[in-house]
Length: 313
Ligand code: CP
Ligand code: NVA
Image 1 (spheres, helix red, strand yellow):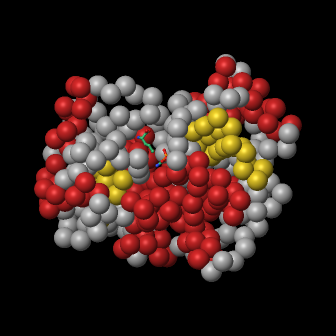
Image 2: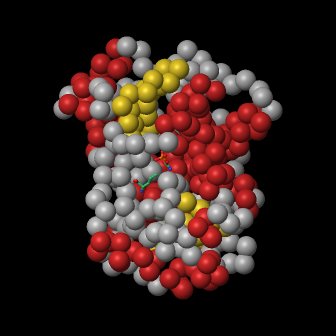
């Protein structure tokens, strides 16, 4: 289904946002519509009260600028109370179990948990033992909130999603996994361009292929050809040590002017940030008028507010 034909229903059936694996095209469209609505209300200075009286715990086991600030602001803008919990400061960081943590948080009236951590299985455990919505703020495997903001940004820029091609260059990481699922489900063509040894999960690629056009290649020309969006991410994700061999393998996949020149004439450049200029992308690309990185960063706020307003009831 194309997003332009989708009629918003004002609800989704999902209880959590663990990965876009669990989301249908319609559920993603519902979030994108709600996000646009909330963004518009924000621009007009209209009050939103979807989370009035609700408290959302924000647990971080890894660093963050965008996710932390956009969730804190998002909860406040929806009339709720955010509670930032660094896992280094709570007993979770000293080995207390996920099971005990979620049970205890619920006893204090926490209404939902957003968590950024390492293992995806920790989120599955939270969802299993708790009865409140769990939202993935990034794991080693997925970053669904980022991809929802990215799809919102592409939709705003082009006025459509169906048929557009996104080419991702670099490490086959959490972003590559989530982009494959998200793009395929909304009718975009997605191509991941990574060197041998750094390709994304074959399972996720196979799953994305069930929904739409998804290719994995080491060929830069093939990936960039006719791409409407050129996307990249850091060589080393949080929790990974910088390693010379990996850097040498990924450097040829740097997004620079020559890569942009292979893409469609008006292609935009995207990056989830933080970026390392001179590594995965050159300054002349990321700081050019074709770059929509700050629209993406802003849309984290609106997309996540949409997710929270639909999940936390
Ligand atoms: N893109 C993103 O998730 O940024 P942070 O690591 O700053 O949250
Ligand atoms: N792949 C990066 C994304 C940061 C938003 C990481 O996991 O560190």
